[in-house]
Length: 229
Image 1 (tube, rainbow, N blue to C red):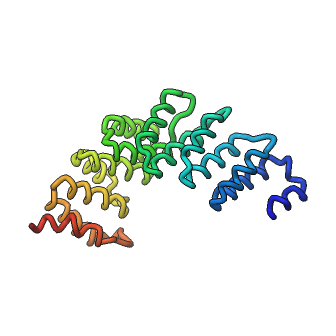
Image 2: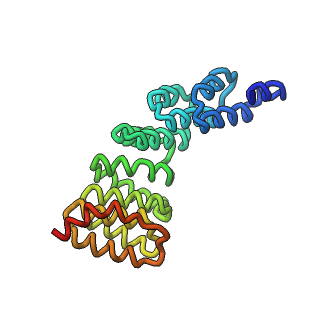
Image 3: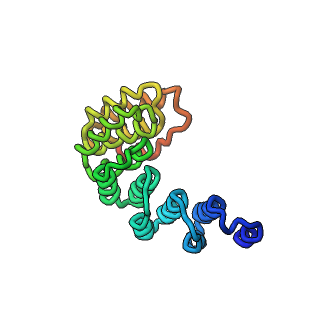
């Protein structure tokens, strides 16, 4: 119905309006309609390609997203980040990291803070510590460490990779800006790597922190109970 209204209103050649239609379908989870509209467009610009690729990634169709990504006449940071984030969010961490490294090798587009926050979980899950350290250096150089998502992603990466000393350094640096994710990553990192007493102590510190609005205690119980054995 909306598509018909667009045609009747004379928007059938308006690339901005048609791209908005593709984006709307994609965000509503109507991927088939989004792809049909995309395929029927006589002209497409970069936002059009990014919208359909993001729709595929959001729906878990990373094969389709990759096929479209390969066909793109040009790419920007949104294009690359969408693929990296899509792979990471769909548990395809190796492909997320490979795409980031390909982006670096290509050299025509520089990662931004969203790219960094998207690739670091892949580093964390793969244990790619050296790449993660290099990404931290890049983030600091570019001023992206001020972004809370980036800081928490770096913290989680170190904690998951077993570098508790470096995780603690980042945790301390975040200071009063810590949120629940910051505390979660540090406490779970300590517990998973056998530092139960330190995890329990930090857990108590979190409970009395005035900066926290909501704390989910249940998830900590299995890990922290080990410290009492």
